[in-house]
Image 1 (cartoon, rainbow, N blue to C red):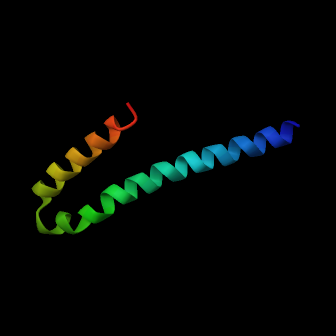
Image 2: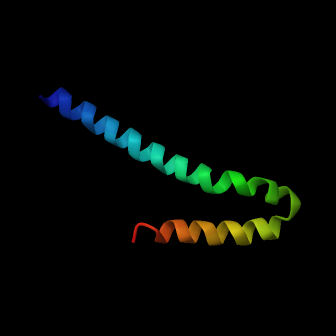
Length: 58
């Protein structure tokens, strides 16, 4: 029974961490070309998107 709980916990942590990475890449990857073209615009757009992403769960 204890091993089953450990496996469930590891799966839960893996899925949780995977969702964090997927959300980050979904937001950050489309902005990467903007980083090369205009770093200040990248910073402004990135700050706006990440602040909206952090407010989403609340």
